[in-house]
Image (cartoon, rainbow, N blue to C red; front, side, top):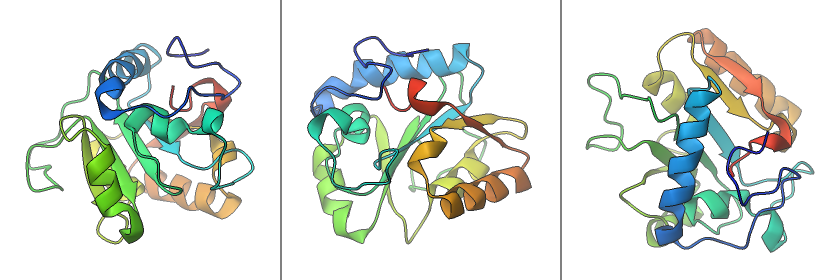
Length: 178
């Protein structure tokens, strides 16, 4: 179940994308999320060994967003996503994808990421789980490769999402940010 052609299902990703190259990848991924019944996908920078320092062929977050920092998450919504009324965490109309980084990487993320595709947030202001809980309707399935989260992070994410009746689905390596 490799959702986007050009991204091998064994998690190996092509070398880092430039922002201009991310639009087609993001579009294909959003379509496939809708087809697969997922409302959103959470992509972690870390790999299944929870490493931050990754070889180029494992840089899934860079492949889908253009962001090359060593820590962060992207949330990509399905192509059918419509933001709820009043949802504007970035102060403007929300985009179909969001990038979450810590304070060290806010400027880098802004320079490397296409602002027509991604809203960028500092973890200190908004985290991916809070964004998902505000952005998605109850009953929505959120996919992620659970191997790329620590046990504590996975449990915390599951609890935050389930409190809003969102379901966390393990996609494994098959769909983790192609």
